[in-house]
Length: 389
Image (cartoon, rainbow, N blue to C red; front, top):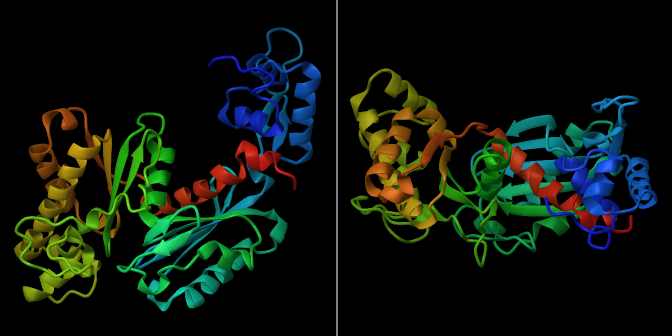
């Protein structure tokens, strides 16, 4: 890495970033990387030690004599609150400052009941998960919601899933109870962030995450970061129409959107239309395991229709890996196989030359990881660490 000057790197927050990344783990390392004098390094490290953000460990490699004291980020210095809110289920957690869950719970929450009901419920659950921890331990909040989000303001803009949340700014409502920075993003964006950072960051900078559940959406990682688009609407693949969809009316008002023909809702609707008594995905899974040909045909058709849209996204975005997640993907391997078949046959040879198509490695935990990281990236940024407290 190019040596940075003492002028360019002069704060405790910058030094913390070096320690967290592993780029500099001793005082000598910090001086070598930054060009700061020994007294300047000692001043910054001393501040981080006093604030509990860094701890000392006397287990560094020795070159003869006393081993150097190694500096390590202290993830237990505080916690962040995470809520991955879906249309049908919500995961909530208290996480340490490395994004590792300390306490988690999954809850069925009807988001259509609106923010006046849902947000107090979520905050009550967080309070229960915190237990005896003081409020001062909470550093930030990260939340994903099933709606288009104006990211800077945490304002929801959606007429699909959370109609009665439209225009609501979520952070001020949460800060009335937890007076910390609050960050809100689209639910699939945070899932994509969690999957990328926890599984693929060392391998790939470009990833497409497709969530297939009650609804269908995508999160795009481009160049290592979330691609949100001009108005926060990047990744809304659920409303791309497919061929031969059968003229199904979508909630957005158009017909044959992939959301209306390949989601969990669509699969259950089509099975009922074929005389199958299903009320949940578990019922459909039981039929597949029993070898029901009609159910297999419905699932594979949903996979082919979804694959048509994913193939177009692959041609447009050229990701290194496509990750498929959500309830439907977890339930039906035949759907995943159908997506793979269509993508590899319809995308360009160059775009698929080294493309991987994988099921989510984290499953539901990806949402919690992404929400935690959404908050941590901000509250532990150099600017936030250096801000007056």
